[in-house]
Length: 91
Image (cartoon, rainbow, N blue to C red; front, side, top):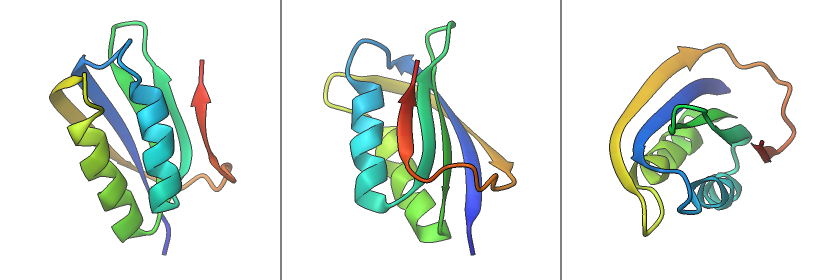
C-alpha cells in the first residue's frame, strides 16, 4: 500500500540546507515526491511511499538538519499521485 502526505514545516528552515537534508532522508527511506521552499519562509514536502517509510521520513523532516529550528509541522493526508519516480528538490 502506498500513502501520501503533504508536509509543511515552519521555523528556521530556509538557508540551512533543509531541502538537501530532506532529499537525503527521502533516499534513505525510499520515498518519492518533492521538497521546496515556500515564499512565506516555510518548507513543503510532498511524500509518497509505504506507511512505515513515510512515517520515518516525517520523523527526520520534523527534526530537521543541524542548523535548523523547527517550530511547527503541518500534515495533510492526500491521495498518492503516482507521478514521482524519485524525490527531487523543486525551486
